[in-house]
Amino acid sequence: MTTTSMDAVPADAVPTAPVLELRAVTKVYGSGPTEVHALAGVDLSVRAGEMVAIMGPSGSGKSTLLTIAGSLEQPTSGDVLVEGTSLAGMSAADRARMRRRHIGYVFQDFNLLPGLTAAENISLPLELDGLKARKAAESARRALDGLGLADRADSFPDELSGGQRQRVAIARALVGQRRLLLADEPSGSLDSQAGENVMRLLRSACKEGAAAVLATHDAQLAAWADRVVFVRDGVAVDQAGPAAGPESLLTADVPR
Image 1 (tube, rainbow, N blue to C red):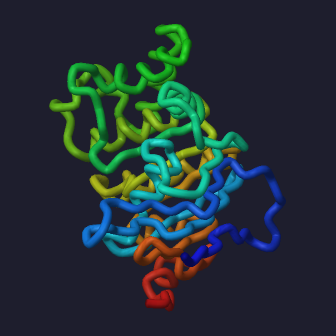
Image 2 (image 1 turned 90 degrees about the vertical axis):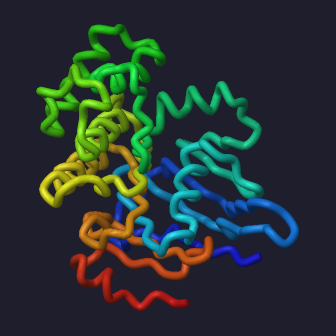
């Protein structure tokens, strides 16, 4: 099976310890005639302060890469390390604890709890990890204010537009000073101005020492990254970075 390296960094980058490492990660769904290789021997290293964008067509393996990096799925083979800790053999409870403390995840479908307000959706993971309710609520409201949703803190998800729900999901991922941020099409429901605000917040988190990985079809979004990795059929086929601008990504010569 082919193993493709995705861990090059800019020549002038200051080496730091990887926050995320994927080592020869393979993911196979099904068996026999229905077997699908979603990922095929992928290596990826993302360091503190770095933002990496993953680009590729639908079905290329972008979302699978993120769910495995975030410990929501386990690889068929290979290993995943978050802040130097291997996820292999870790119990479900330990993986959940790691997600609460170390990983902020922005899902395509938001994954907000319908019975909780916007602020409560954000503060709940902090409370589960031991933060006092008052401080958790304060952190949630600050995060919402940063995304222009201070006036919707007490609204329930079904009272929010799709774009507003997306921003609540992003606020939930950013609170708690998590070191690894994973985002699957984080601006998919947002207009261009709101999308830029989201990227500024992610960039700010990286400047404070977080690592971010984004899966996206949007060249404008990917242009914010330090590095852009192109994937096809579960394999990294090319990478570029930092991007000169979105036009360079649209015209990138990606092997087929």
